[in-house]
Length: 343
Ligand code: TLP
Image 1 (cartoon, helix red, strand yellow):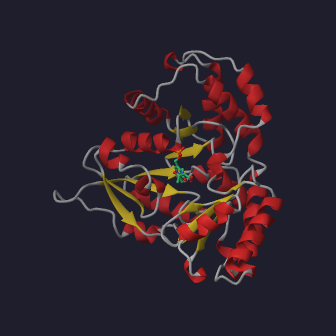
Image 2 (cartoon, rainbow, N blue to C red):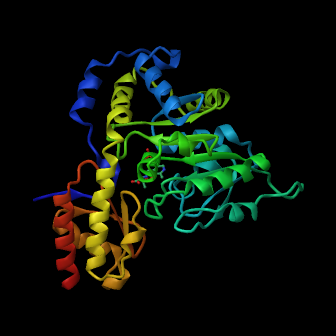
Image 3 (cartoon, rainbow, N blue to C red):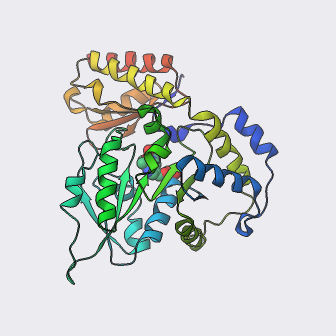
């Protein structure tokens, strides 16, 4: 049976060029700083984000958690969005590992404003935890791949600096934002003190993320990474795929966006109260309620046709376009969905 896997862009497979690079990679013991391929990847990550340094980590989750560990002290308060990955999907890591409290704000389709943030910054008072960190997710996953406008990032950063708040960007999909906004990622990451981005989502590398920031911040992250057991040895094999990801996979992300748009237009044409304009990058979220179905029912019917989607709540499903999905796969999905909708 034909399989169209729209669950996530994490299901992407390493490309032939990556497999070749993995095979030929020069490696060494990275805990001694002796893996040339990891060193090359980390230099590339720093250069692309316009930061002093970057660190190769096992996952986006580890990158985010290292950022919180390195920017905060126990008892601090961290502002984040209600549906952000760092709050919603990281197993309460910021509370467990860093001992900080989350102050959540609900953004407009995931996007926070400077005014909202200003309204919750704590004042100097022994009753209150100090606000020391802000996390922004760009693109925002659960909000459907939405991007922060650069002007919003600029005003948030200015506000944060005035209040001595460290800004971290969970840029797991920041390259999708950069492609959508037609800028290089340093034009986005300049509005945060640190940024995490994933190599293993739309960019197709098998494993790994980078966290970037100042040299001092990355030194702290390196120590915390060791604490978490994330100091890897000859992991240059993984970094080799990451270098290919950064050098040759970014340009193709626009195709994923075009396919998401094709899917969105198809859904809008089915008259299921879907606004195609809400789709900005490679994530499409649909409300199953107008179809008289739960997310579980609809995803089960789609699975019978070989179409895999993620359930994102009782009445929400998420579909993500990526390197393994063609326009033909999208048309197949639209046709099958249309038949299900017509009953
Ligand atoms: N997101 C995954 C799931 O965990 C939901 C997905 O399929 O989208 N930040 C953001 C914005 C993410 O979407 C993810 C992964 C992460 C961080 C964590 O990355 P990993 O999976 O590498 O730990």
